[in-house]
Image (cartoon, rainbow, N blue to C red; front, side, top):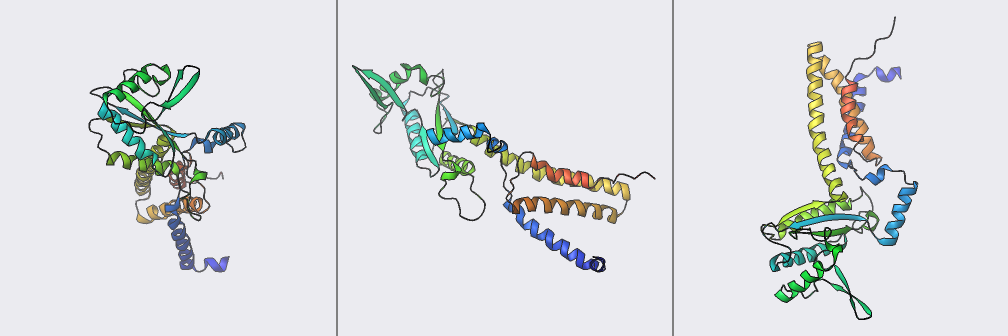
Length: 296
């Protein structure tokens, strides 16, 4: 070991090579905000959740609300937009099912029989008779109120069920896994941008949307916080030592340790959760602090 340290440039070259290697792994870091992953896989709650998905299908649901600020949901143009949007969403590769005002089932009794039919059939064209029939169906069943349509009848909700990650046929055999929620969120945004919704207001909600937006905000926070912490550390070191070496040497150590830590996490497939995102900031802040002085 002493012979190794007799060649300082060799030590620097090895550390630089390892740092570059781990730096190349950084783009492979996976941000994970799924709250289910924070629960142990063998817990009864997770097993019950998985059994429920096996029995009833995917429970990963994205919610979309459409509001007609100048009217109600019982208008021809609005209903045709909902129908078009429903059709486009159903065609997305990661969609398991879509439930909307134009394809949801309406259950009614006729004589001794129970008849199940869509509120608006596939041949719905928005004629006054079709719109009135849909309106009568919605008004006759309280189950729709506050769930499928708002109480003021200005808004309607579309439920988009996303396929679980295990059913992702497009996932690569080798390489980082594909996040169905993130892909679906991007696909839905693309569909919304391609359809002329006029003055209709669109809102997206649900756990998939929250997870995606939290990942985006986490990435933005890291881009902002890490340089900000480094800047504060650089200023602190400069005012403490008043020389370049006193700034670069401590800073190099904490930056290298941060790159090694996050790069190793990416290499081993360890996801960066909401808690783990503070690791780089803590490493930079704590690693540049003074060592505790030992008692004489």
